[in-house]
Amino acid sequence: MRDIRIFSAFGKAFIPKRIAPNIKGQFLKIGYNEVPYTLFGMLFFVTFIVTYIIYFYQIFNTIKTLNPLIFLLYTFITWTVIPLVLSILTMLGIYFYLDLKIFKRARDMEDKLADYLTYVSTNLKGGMSFESSLWSAIKPEFGLLATEMGLVSKKVMTGSELVDSLEEFSEKYPSPIIRRAMNLIISEIQSGGKISKLMDKVIEDLKKTKLLKQEMAASTLTYVIFISAIIIVIAPVLFALSYQLLDIMLKFMGRFAGLEIANMPMSFSSETVIDPLNFKRFSFFAISMISIFASVILSIIQKGDFRSGIKYIPIFLASSIFMYILASGILSSLFSGIVV
Image 1 (cartoon, one colour):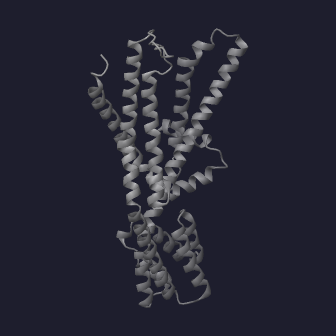
Image 2 (tube, helix red, strand yellow):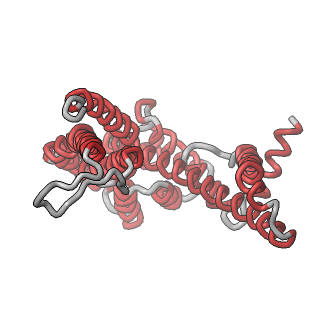
Image 3 (cartoon, rainbow, N blue to C red):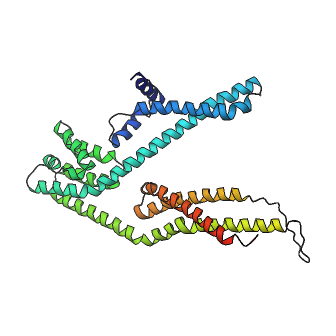
């Protein structure tokens, strides 16, 4: 228990006070009421453990013979820069993870917003007040949207203004669809118009928007198939073929090294600046980069946002590397008898 408190204390000290409210707001958006300071404290200790390993196993042996002042300078820089870089990378990773979770939750609510507002509109037409309609429309099948609207209803019941509660909900998540729908409802409430008629128009627009997105995704299916084929098949096979051709050329040049062919202004040398092992490493790196960026491009084409494609990166990455290894093995067996 004491260890957990120590980690929590370090976590609170680790996070600057200026950004602490923003971090708390981000965690609230993914359903955590409290910031996990214990986790941040553990990560703080992990950064120093990693710095210790890097310093004593990589840097210390190199600088221990230097002048004492230079040795102290390098030590100070190491124990300052490396923890700072690791901390920044850790915070960026956590922020990126939170951003993805928030984006996923917003998309989930967007998909169910039209159905929820349909219940609200039905309740309004049945004679209920708008506040009661919001509460009565909450159903378990709406999931996160039901939870959020439940919070809105509870705030209204405990004395908060309806408009303020709806505005807070619309600004909580980065969703233009939710924000636009809530702004229209709020403006109609403030103007005192017939909210049920506006609600029907909002529901119709939401359904049309959802249908339009599905049609756009279907119309881009050809591009998705083409880019997927490039990622999984074409690029790995071309890199594997290039490696085999390089290997054949090097064997051929090694066999005729030092010979000069008559009437030809050229000679063969076994010395080369191209290392097959380096080319193979480059191939893995290039295939990985192609898979990552192609996944992002596919997400933008289909969904209009790169964050939807993050989940496809491991699939494309594993498939393309597997195809490269498979193609390399097949081509190696086919070309093995060309140069003996």
